Length: 310
Image 1 (cartoon, one colour):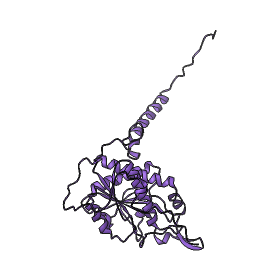
Image 2 (cartoon, rainbow, N blue to C red; image 1 turned 45 degrees about the horizontal axis):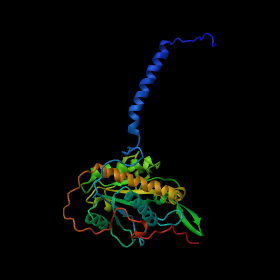
Image 3 (cartoon, rainbow, N blue to C red; image 1 turned 60 degrees about the vertical axis):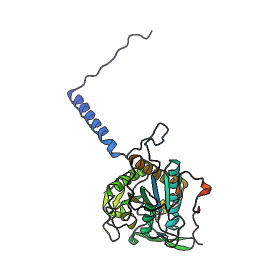
Image 4 (cartoon, rainbow, N blue to C red; image 1 turned 90 degrees about the vertical axis):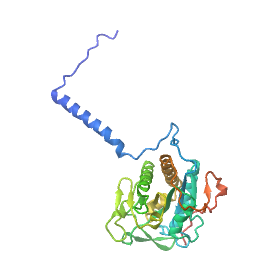
């Protein structure tokens, strides 16, 4: 019914075979190198849940950068950095408790709190990891002015992205760098990009860049890092003087991506830390420790973004 089928088999020249052989070698080499170019994957099961074991007594100290009276940077729309820091800490706290990680908070009420006191409180709370949460600005040379609600505000659309800092002082540098790498990888995995402007050789910057792909810097002079007795890192989550990035930072979707990335990196670090560190000269717990608290039981106010003054 179909008749006789005829097949044509093309003759391959030696040059075609040689080209195919070279392409195969190139593809094999690429497949070997590609995993090292991707963010570190977190161990998950078929549902996406993290699978590594984590000590039940593991605690992370979330430090809310700045205070109400010294609120840090001012965003392009006139909103304080402290507002964004506390908002992110609240979201990260919620994600961490979902993963079963104990959380201790410092600076939640916005009251006066010296830098060295933040790490002393974390030590008293027996925290195993310290993460200070901030939002970023740029050097004055990059700032321009625009009108917001009848007021002139400073902005810069030159830089955007996150930055992670660790200190080489304090004796916890290897562990701090390990966590910073997990954090940077988790942020990359969430689709965020690092900013490299802190490495620029200008006054106020020039920080040694340890990993450009993950956005990790070394900054030995940061008090909240060099005074920490446990592994510690500082995250600049976004450049809030960048008008587009601030708009993103106000988005619940962007906030959730940040908080989830932070929580997953802490949980992954916890799973790699099977033994608690030695406790030397540690007093009673000075900070509230929470695991899975209802939203109505939060010990700090939930503040909406303040509107710029008319």
